Length: 391
Image (tube, rainbow, N blue to C red; front, side, top):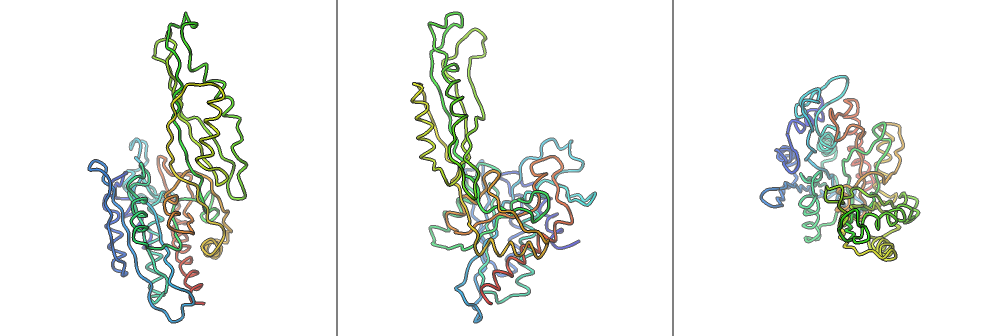
């Protein structure tokens, strides 16, 4: 059993459903402490939802060969996992790591405990070969990525920003690959902006519609118009901004009552061609033009971020090519990630990990054959950045 597989199995065995870290970060901190990392737990959140975060840092070692000032690369990720769903539907216990048919099964196997294990072992191997590296190394881990994400990575980033600590590069171990490990990495993510629209009418008897005002009828042409809006055209890195309705709530439950209100939940996934302010203004103008009486509440879940091709993208692309022969596609697809918080304090943020086809599903798994290449890619990334600093 390789060191990466062994650690991945240890982490999967921790039942770390959000926000419970279940001992994952303690296990990782012990390994990092032995490598000279300073360990700083950051506990946040209310009593009923305690979130465990870990900030670990190993300073750069003075190196006369270094051609550039010390740079900090951070490996970031989450130790929490989503609930398992009905355990009876799993072929094996979701928190008992199980190998069969060439795969490692367990909740978190793909998202993203194997990536974290690969981070740790890659750093161990790199430092064994380059103990005098001028690179500073960091780990930023949270147990609140799969949950509300209010007391996790964002809190650590705020702490680092208040201290003036500069992160130069960040790699997040999210499962980004599509068919094969190495075929895709994320160099950005779209922003997310949610709204709750309450359209007001007048409740009344359904047989006397002239004495009432049906808000659902008033809403219908508005929805038709909003569905057809072209919010922007996207750009070379992002697809066009989209608008989607997730829920509609209206009616009293009785079949003979015209409701007084209807509530619509919707969401924008937006690119860098639009801003939250521009989207809010354009949507409100449609509502106003239709003469609706309404209340509208907004929630900004995160701004879009983008890392254009540069030192970090080049270093991991070369690492992936050397290990797998693949040239990864740069993508900004998918949902949000904690990269939206890290990008505020780090100019170059990318995400790379194993295939994501089984994440959040019953019988989540990773191919055993993908584990060592994943670790090797992370190690090669460090070697490439080291060689850049010490040509």
